[in-house]
Image (tube, rainbow over all chains, first blue to last red; front, side, top):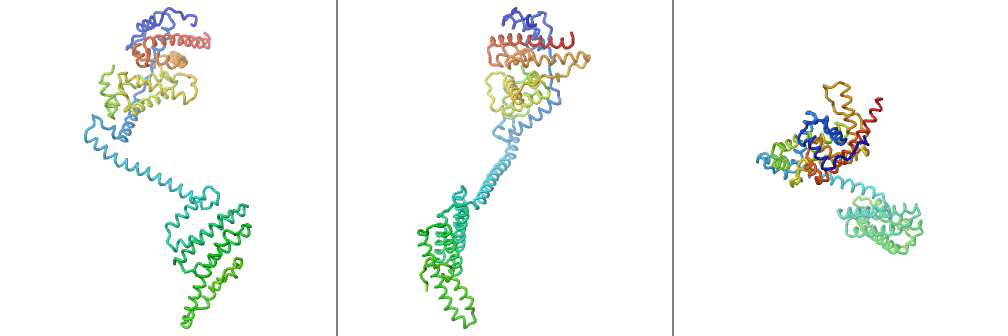
Length: 296
Length: 189
């Protein structure tokens, strides 16, 4: 067949011949009288059989098409301004679409809030275990600030003491890894100072928290010694703090002792109070290192 | 030519009128299906692609620009794009198998087999032509459009269409001749 492909027809001549043999708009196909292979190839294409989409499939596609159209125009009511629509159908479309829009907006907002909550909660949970120098540590400190912002003086006092203990925990954990972070010791002293200011403001009787504060101070000194951290920077602050706490505790003891002396006659329990204040003996707490000024 | 006011129907269909969408669908579905059927080797795939063409029509109608070009030209362009997507999806041209077309039921089994084989040969040969050549031959000889209509649909000049038609038929004749020789050889003729 290759060798039979002559050049009897140029483009226009072939087009005219094809128009004669395969007239546009008609579907009758006769075998071309001419043996030119191009006409024969055109006859092959034209004769069919031409596939027909069966009625069932066509109807199924049409139903899908109309359903899609309905959805599209329900989702975009602006497109529904069809000239063929009646006022009633437009009103129905509006009534249906408004709740759908609100529902959709609510679902989006709820999803965003849920995502934020999960992300925030997850970050906070993970950050609670973070240590200084780690990426999430600033988040941990930010959460602590947030807790303080919404706390009463009494709650803040407790939080400050917990944060001081936490700074020492962090220092100790890093120390085990061979990493000495003096800032944690410094922050612990700052938390203790803030706690004592709250005590002075009357957030809590000093005798209730003095023991805990002095224990934290003792642990501070112990950790600093383990890490061979020169205490020059912290020492003055810590000594002053311990002295202040001790002094306040002693004053409180004097007041309570006087009251107790008067209350003893009334059958009060001076032994228990005495034992309790006795625990503020600085020497017994190992604070002779600081040579604290006796409070009494 | 459509037996309805095509401009008004398109306008209403753009605004979501279901009856108008149905009219446009029924007017063009068989032509689009025939076109797609010649471009892909399986009628089930052709039916799926035809459905996609009209779904895309509904989605894109609000953006359809009535600039005087035939509406069916727009549909053929959508169909050509869907066929191209199909072939991109399967990453390679599939081997042409036996035709899925149902041959004339009144014919004898031998005639049915021969018709099916010839149809498969034709489709395989067409698939070896360029997309433009396939479009020209299908529109001109299956859909029986005039050279002017084909030119308008494909955005070419009539001269360019006639020239491309000449080349497409020359190439198709070569391919069909080769297919025919191979088939006759296999039959021991």
